Length: 97
Image (cartoon, rainbow, N blue to C red; front, side, top):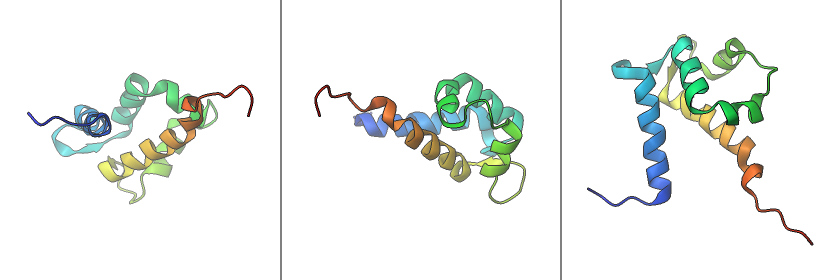
């Protein structure tokens, strides 16, 4: 087995989670996206979207090609947006700047 860096392991985890919910078709329907969000990233989604945006709105924003499914590229857009929004949670707080 190849020894992966922490970042590579995290990237592999993202890929595995996507395929866990998308199955062989490699696309997420709305119910599958909802299950993935609820089970795998609910805390970070609340930071990015709060309670204001519904799953329908989020799905419509992500479904760039309008096929009513979220492919891996569209899913990575979600991961990128949420990771960027949550970045500040992990910046060390300095006492006297």
